[in-house]
Length: 232
View 1: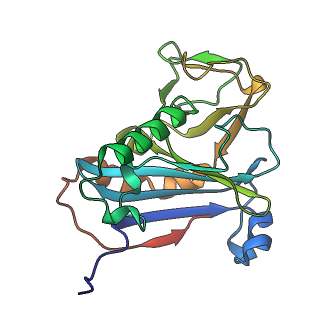
View 2: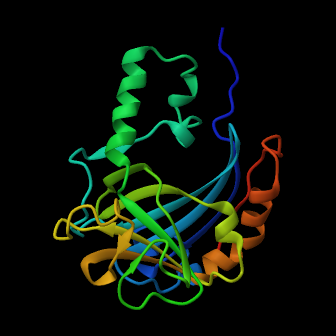
């Protein structure tokens, strides 16, 4: 007998995108804003998780960049993708499936570093020593090197509470290129001159600040629903 199921536990999402992405996706050019290449679009998604709210940063980028990622075209962790069909049907996966997703998480670890900055980063920095910034690095929730022609996608969980603080006006996600020294992110080290920087538009962070603050404060039993807004 068919069962009704919720396709998503999305709570809130904000999206900022470039004129280039607007042209590719058929989005309103009036809502597009200039973004620093190779970023084509950025979204912050807030959703209910098992232990509280999950804040996800989604990056849409020029698929032509030489980003260092595992060799598969597409890869995802289970974690916050539990609500994505057909993962939502997994209740007690067997050992083989658990091992599969465990391997995915391992491959997606140490792939990106998110910086919340009081000022823009000048030069290189090491997490814990940068007095003007705070850093987080989680395994990527997933990526697709080219989920549509010319556009890649990746997503990583970010710290809701840190992202909501008004003192942090600058936000960047750093990833390694294939020419970057190995294990920069593993060692908590970022150098924009030798890495790929996705500069998150300030208007997106500011526009989502109250929602991020609420996500940091709300309990796991918070409301469910959906709200989507373009932030320009």
